[in-house]
Length: 572
Image (tube, rainbow, N blue to C red; front, side):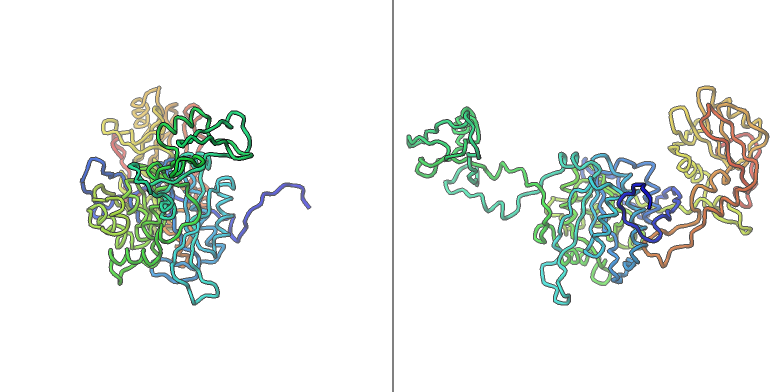
C-alpha cells in the first residue's frame, strides 16, 4: 500500500487518452454571412462556425483565450434517445472523455470574470458535476439551477420528469458574485407592493424598522404624528441611528399607520427595487418550457424541418442577463438550432456559435439572418424591443494542413494556397498572422521584434543571407520553407523545413471529434508521424538561444507535383 496522496477524481475507460488537436485556420463562406445596418449600436463582430466543435475551439484558442465572458452549452444528454440532428446515445466513458476535452478548451477561453452554464438532465448530471470539479476546481462551483421544462405531468414514467439542470461554474466565483446582474422581480414579489393611499411614488410595502438585540445608541424615543411616544420593543433596537430616522421622516418615507400612532415602518417603493438575487428555482412561467421552444422553432422553420431539442429563448435570456452585459462575448459550441446566438444578438451581446451538423446552414444561418433582418417576431423579440441590425460572418474549418500522397508520405494539402499555408504555420508556431504588404518576408509576428516568413521555395544560402540583411541585427525571423541549401549561420534567422518541422505536432487528417462516435474518422497516430521523422538533416540557427536544435526528419516533398523555386525571394 502506497503512502502517496492521491486526489479524489472520477475515473473512466480511456481517460488518459487525449487528442493531439491540430489548430486549424478558419475560412469564411461569404454566401452564408449576412449584415444589415439599422443603428449606430449594431454589432457585426459575430462568428458562426461550421465544423467539429473540438477543432473549432482549438482554432479559436490563439485569438480568444481569456476573452469570453459567458459560455452556454446544451450538449447531448447521453440518454439513448435518437434525434435526427444528434447521436445522443453514447456510452458513459466516451461521453465523459469527449466532454472533458471540450470543457478544458472552454475554460481556457473564459475571461477572468467569466462563467460557464451547462444544461443537463438527471442521468448524466452527477458525472458532469464531478467532471466540472476536476476541470474548473470545486471552489469554482456557483449554482445548480433547476429549470422546470414541463408544465404538465408525465404519466408514462414511474416518476414524471419535469426538470433539467442549468449548472454554473465561474473562473472566480467572488468576482462573478460582485458583477452578476440581479433578476427582475417576479409576480409574487410585485404583488406585495400596494398603494392604498394613492401615493404618487407608486406601490409600496412596509419594512420593519427594528432589529434584534440591544444597542444603546439606537434605543431613542420616537414621537408619532399623534404625539404618542414609542420605544423599540423589548430586546430590540431601531434599525437606524436617530439622525437617519429623522431624515427619513422628513422625506415622507416613514409610515406610522393610518391613525398616525403605530410603530414606525419604512416605506419601500417598488420603483426602488433594482432586482432580486437570482436563485436556483427557475419555473416555466419565468424562463419558458419545451413546448414554448418548439413553437418558436415551428414558427421559424415549420413543423417538418424542426429541431428536436431546442431551448426556449427566455431560458437563454435569463442566463445571459445574469452573466453578461451588452457588448460582452458569448460562446456556444453546441449551437443546435441557433438559440444562444439569436438571443445574444437580440440582447446586444457579441457571440460565437459552433455547430458541426448540416443545420449550421439549414437552421442556424437562416435563423440568424432573420434576426439580423428584423424578421423574427418570436421569442424575446418583443420583450427586448428588438428591431434588427448587425451581422455575422460564417466560417468553416479549413482542411487538415497535411495529407498523404500516393506513397504514404505526408505532404502539405493540395487544398492550401500560399496564404492559407502562411496563416496555418503562424498558428502552429504561435505567431499572429498579419502579412506586411511592403516587407515580403513578414507574414506575422510573436513580439515586436520576432517575425515569421513562410514559403514553399527551396532557399539557397545567398537567399538566406539576403533575408538576414533585410531583417537586420535588432530583429529575428523564423523561416519555414520547403527546403534550404547550405548551412545557415545567421544569428537572426531560425530555419525550419515544412512539413517535417510539424509532423509530430498533432493528429493530421482527422476531421471528426464529434459526439457521434459512429461517424468518427480513424485517428492518425502520432507515432506514425514520429516514425516518418526518423531520418533527415534539418538544421536550425540559434538566435540568442531562443529555439532548440531541430529534430532530424525525413526529407519529404512539400507540394506534390510543384517544383520549388530557386529565384530571388518573393512572397511564398
